[in-house]
Amino acid sequence: MTHYLELAKDVVNKIAAQGVEAEAIIVDERSTEIRVDQGQIEQLAQNGSKGMGIRVIDGGRVGYAYTSDFSDRAVEETARAALELAQIATPDDFRGLPDPQPISEEDLEIFDPKLDSVPTDAKIDLALNAEKAAFAADPRVFNAQSNYGDAIIHVSIANSRGVAASYSRTAAYGYIFCTARDDAGDQAQGLGMDVSNFYNELSADRIGQEAAQKAVLTLGATTVKTQTGSVVLDPFIMAQLLATLSMAMTGEAMQRGRSFLVDKLGQEIGTDKVTLLDNARLKRGLNSAPFDGEGVPTSATRLVDEGMFQNVIYDTYTAKRAGTKSTGNAQRDSHRTLPRLGGSNFYIQPGNESPEDIIAGVEHGIYVTRIMQTGGINPVTGDCSMAASGVWIENGKLTHPVNGVTLATTLPDLLRNVTAVGSDLRFVPFFGAIGSPTVRVDNMTIGGTV
Image (cartoon, rainbow, N blue to C red; front, side, top):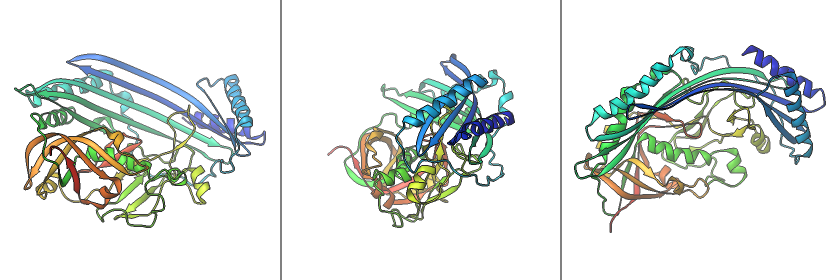
């Protein structure tokens, strides 16, 4: 990887000699994707890619070009294309490259050196064993599709202001969608997932058993009468809501007026149970990194502290517009794309209660294990409406499965009605990495029958 960094530095030095700002990023990635269905391997794909992206900024005008050919001729042509594109771009005085800053050498534990030597057969077995675990967990499970994937990524970046850095990251995951059916013919689905930077932390049994348990949990579901009650959100469900909420907590959303939180900085927006962080310094975080997609050191940003809205995230561009510093939140999808502002590890800080204790404290309400129509959650207006299924809670006990209900609230009301946050923090790879434990929200409209 050292030679990639030297190549990036050499490229930007040559381009900068023409009186412009320049940046080169090199991404080398290898990945595996496996899909198993009914004990048969449906897909086995192993891909490798490497490429260089070159960004040129000339008087606030940006040009970007990329190549997967590292020959001198190809790199020169890519640099020339970026220069030419910059000449015809619309100028923006806030466009510029970051200055170098010290990057912490702390080990974030995001690279598994053993992943590269894991045999493909072992990865296939993990997917097969997860499927077997789902079928073995409950005889009502009749269909399951098991998936495994991993990635080994090396990133090097340099710019003409003196930024020069590199890092490596790995990720491995497994998940299953399974379907269960009862004697009456009713069907329900469940998802089981495991994800980590380290292959050995994945558990086929855990993935399969979770999928099966969630599938059978809502078999034979009925609806309930429309009422106001407590809603206990499974970590995966709350993570989906947080994914939308994270979009409302960026400098770009504030500057464009595209957030229900505009003009709310410094105000109380939730209960004291709500502490939200965007933390790219989280050890073993799915989206942790020593620096962001522009070479800016990453940080742990406390966005909401015990209900008080304190900060938003920035990249270099939005930070310049706001007259502040970048929080290190420029994300790169690949060498083919310009950096964009986005979350890293965005999560609600866990509490001390177990999911069982949270459920035990509910007089009447619903434990939600699945939602649909998540397009009804809007980060601009704060509207929040979703179809849901789960299990009805009565006097602290899970009683009967529920389906065909609609949960209606707003994101502001949701934050103001969080009354319990569990200890079971889990991350899912949405929009970076979104994490949540089990969360209880009171005073929500549960729409069912009249």
